Length: 231
Image (cartoon, rainbow, N blue to C red):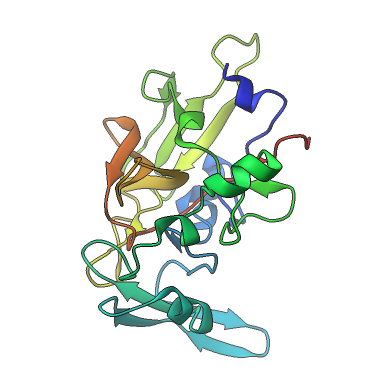
């Protein structure tokens, strides 16, 4: 019910996901993984990207002494660190929530936003109320673990979406962990004046729409929303 989200739509799946239904399972529904502020994605699983013309391996490297330009020229290098993946303090330069562009174009989509044209990453407020929304069928330990959450309880027909137990890439070593056990996804929001970023987190007992931590080196999926003025 926020004016900033009127006549706008959230993707029915995580960015890059083949599936979006609970029957598709969390493996097909996780999609691509991103470190906060980076536009280039990473796979889940064994860190190998297979293309028709060959195989490319994701490498892992300490984030000590890493600058933004390193991530641009080495898009398949995952920079692990207990905190931010870069030493730079120019947070707005590589943030997904570009306040300068917000003033100019009204939607704040930054250069590093990974969403396709016409779409952008949402403010954290898009997930407000998910902690109290009706949700069903986590089915932990199964191939389709995750919540079905009713996104519009006031509507006559339920509008439920699948939030898969996607797991995440560990900020300390770049390994993929917790698949089938927890789920999370980035918002574009940062806590004012800090390096803390705000993200959605959920597991088999709870949904936390406003987690915040200075762990930009984590790897999480994202779900895009249409830009303002687009339908």
